[in-house]
Image (cartoon, rainbow, N blue to C red; front, side, top):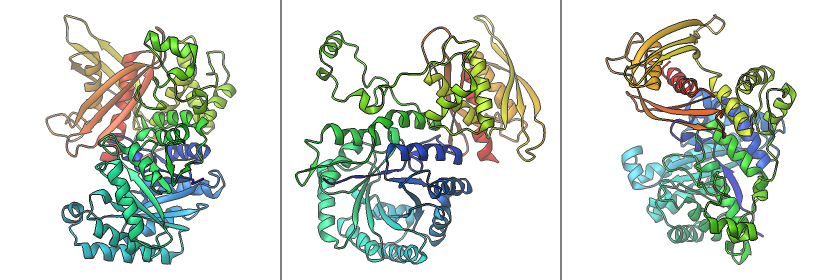
Length: 533
């Protein structure tokens, strides 16, 4: 029975989702959960891209070396540059099994407009850098990716793959970088490539979802001999995202009768009962909620509203459900915590969810939990997840909400008075100072955000900005985490830096929606502040 290796790139390509950033702590928590879920390879990041990503990849690699990730391979991305390969070698040094993932674009549109090199120069880089990576002895495996492969001239694609394989690449990845291909077309490319390039190399695919065909293209590739599928949890990634790991895995499980290679069933090593918890952890740490109608892991995946559907499911689940909720880990009872719950019970549940908080982190999150519990009768897993996620978002922040007052009514313009505790990031040991500003707005939320902008210099004021606001609010929303009038509200915002268009997300939770909104906005402002400095 052919085994499909699941290569998870949530920590690298998933992090390229606009507004998403994983620090070393978040990457480690997700990596541990991915290992528990049974992925074969974790792409931990792109070490040469920033010192922060170098640290994050090192953190995951060190956990691997300590045995915390089992037999999972740890991979790092690198361009066809010796300095990138050196950075990957440094970052992966302590991993149990180390994979170098080197890539270069092979389509003419990329060569001409992005890289501005000829085909011959591209081939030379592939040969030189693949050989260099092999010569270091720092990697157990080398994977080559031909970026934008599905829009590349086929003969040149073959030359590029042959160049990489000839210098020691054992895995060849064929990415549909912009989600352009179709299942039948993709199969033709892969079959011809296999037939044209000799050698003992494994075939991998990496599909994007721009036309909604990432999962279909990935499965089509498996049917014609691809041994590895690259994907992300919840389908995170650039633009419309990547092929979703949960969709691929459950399609292989549910339709094993139809999705075959050479007449044989296909399988993978994913523990499907861990999928839901993994999805929720990634949603929490990324700040990107799962859409309710998302396949497999969406809130409505097993919900039935129409009367005829409800009647059918009650009579026989198989009438409208093709998957068993238990197979996705949905059979466990949700633990309900309240104001009488102790620190130990809280810490246990947080650990079960996949978060690794130290003692200080548990104390801080538990204090917040008790504060919410005084206002809310019972707290569910979703409440706890929101509280812990908010705490993790705040760890590296400069500004924290101290107090706020709002004046608003149907005949007066809203006014907000906001006080923030501001840390001096250049002097970590120095006591924070309280800064207060007032600002008007079209409503209480707008007024509060304007006051925060004044404090942070995001309005073009004291911090050296222009006359107009330096950041732009591009989305805002608030939802009830659970039901009831005492529900915990979770606010999410996205802001963009006007100069370079970089997007930052933030979230806040509270039973007071204005407080939740201010905290969410502060989360985004703190990320903007960090980038600015």
